[in-house]
Image 1: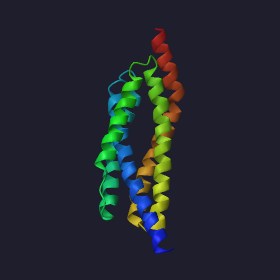
Image 2: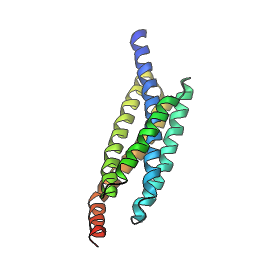
Image 3: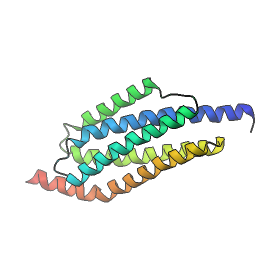
Image 4: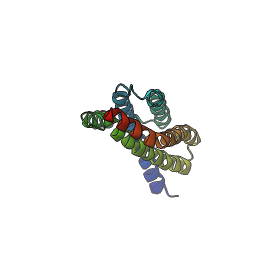
Length: 167
């Protein structure tokens, strides 16, 4: 691999790390807004609370990886993504089917995060960042646990919400 190619891979990796850090901040903002609005869904509330903590841990892991590479998170990206997370959460608030919309959006968001982590892991492997592979894989596994949990509960959540609205 030529130096120019190696530099391009490192640059893409560093950009991806910063982007994923911002995405984790967005996830935290989205989930924190949602958790207070799902009191009628206690299992979902507990899982969201757990995933908020996982997302904070993901951001911390990303901080560690970036620190080892001598880079820092992009404050601008973090701010913009947090703002977008807040706006997305607010957009669903007045919806008559808010819980259902949030469930579907969360399912899609988890798959985006899984894809992003897989991409970062490939780059980490390419440049030989073994510790990065370990940290990123750990976060990927937690995202991979959340997505099927949401999937398993889509029908149940939708039907419970419909029953509550009909009552």
